[in-house]
Image: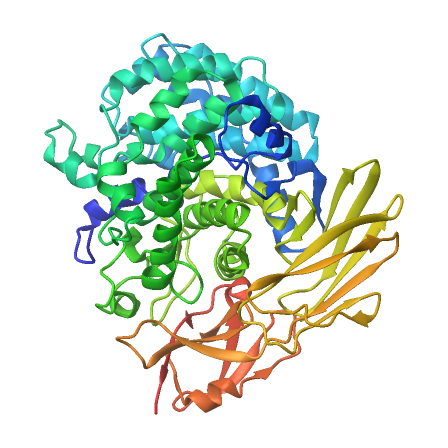
Length: 620
Ligand SMILES: [Zn+2]
C-alpha cells in the first residue's frame, strides 16, 4: 500500500488490519516446561490475570468500560450472521458495520457488511480474559452461552466460509476465542468446537503462509483475497497445541510460519518490513515467538528480535505508534515525516497497541531487557490510553492522527477490527504490569495496582501507589505473611537520568539505578517494607526522522506533549525545552511559540475535541 492508494483500496487494507491472538501463557503454564508441549523454559512468566488488581486510574477504567460493553452486548446479535449462514432461526438485530453478511440494506439504503462475524472470537476471548480478572460468574456464563451458540452453527464443512472474503483472518480470531474460553473459563465445549472448526477450515486455506505478493499472483474470484492473513495463524495454533496436546495444531502451526519471505530474511538481519501491512506483520512476530517457545527455534527468536528492532528504529513515531496508512515505509526516505502532511491515519491504535503489547511482553519474558518495557509504556501512555471507548452501537476509535493538524475522530464504520483487540488488550493490562521470575518479581509498569503471590509457604504482595507519569514518584508497599528472601526488580526507563532515586525503607540504595535496566533489590523482605522510586523527567526533543530535522516532538519521561493549536506552530528548541508545567488535571505544559503565542502542550490521554500537532516545527 502507498499513500496514493484509492479510498477503496485503503478500506480493504483497513479490513486486513486486524487479527487477534491469545495472550502469552499464564502462570499455571509454568508447568508447560514439564508437560512436554514446549521446548524452551523462558525466564519470566506472566501472572494469572486474577492475581493482579488494577486500582483507580485510566487502565482500570478502560478495562471496566470494555468488560461492561461486551458483557451487555446482545448475544443474538453477536451470533446472528453464523445462524443466518447455517439456515437457523436468527433473531435479533443486525450488528451493523463490518460485522454483517455483505448485502444491500433497504433499511440503510446502502451496502453493508464487510467481514461477517470477524470479531466474534475476539469478543469471546476478551470476555474469557475479563472473567479471569474479575471472577464474574455473569461473564463466565455469557462466554459459555456464546461458545455453545457458535458450536450449534458449525457444520462439518464449515460452510460459513464458502466464498468468504478472509477465512484465515476470521478463523484466527475464532481460534483465539475458543482456546481462551477453554483456558480461562474452563468451557466444556470450546476445545471440541475448536477442533471441528480447525479440521473444516483447512479446505479454505492455502497450503502455506502466503505473503501478500504471493497472494496477488494467484488468481481468485475476489481480489480482496490478497489481504488474508495466513501468516498470523501460528501463535494461536501453537497455544492450541500447548493447551490441548493435539499434534494436529502443532503441524498446522509449523505449516503457516511465513519463513521463506518473512522470518528467514528477518533472522538474517534483512529488513523486509517496507510496504508490508503494519499491524498483521507485527502480530506475526508473536507467531515467531511461539515457534521459539514451542519448538526451541532460535531462528524465529532472532526474526522476532530483529523485526522488532527494525520496527523501533525505522518505522516508529515518538509516541511508539507505527505504520501510517497501515503500511511500513522505506527506511531513509523520510517516510514518517512525509506522512505528517499526507495522512490522518497515522497509527491503527487498538490493534497496533495490542500487537505491540504482545511482542514486547514475549521479548521481555525471554530477554529480561528493560527496553521492551520502555517501549510498551510509550505505546500505553501515548496511544491506547487516549483511545475513545467503544460505544454501544459499535462506533469505535481506530486511527491516532499525527497529521500536522490532527484531531481525535471516530472510525466511519461500526464494529471494526479495533473493536475486537481493544477489550483483549485492556484485560491484558493485568498480565503486563508484573512478571514473575524464579528468584522474585519484575515491576514492569508503574500504575496503581496490587499483585499477590505465594512462595515457599509465604503469602506476598506488592501495592503500588502512584500518579505516574503525571508525577515522578512511585511508592511500593511490601506485604509478607512472614519474612521472605527474594528480589524485586524495578524497571528504570532508558530516558531516566542517573539522578533517579531508589529507596528501601527510606534508605537510598547505592549504585542501583542504571537507566535502561531493571534495578535488582535482593533482601529478606518483611511485612511493611517500602520501596520508593523517584524518576525525574526532564523535557527532551525527538525528531520524526533524519530527513526532517525541523519536525520534533516534545517529550517528558514516557509522555509526548502535543501542541494544542489549529495549525502547526513553530518554536525555537530552547523555548520548547523551557516549557512550564501547568498545575491542572490534564497534565498540561505551556511553551512560547515563534508564531502563535503561548501554546498549551497536552498529553494524548487528555486530548478531547481540540486540534493538535504531535510534531511541531523548529525554527533555528
Ligand atoms: Zn484495528
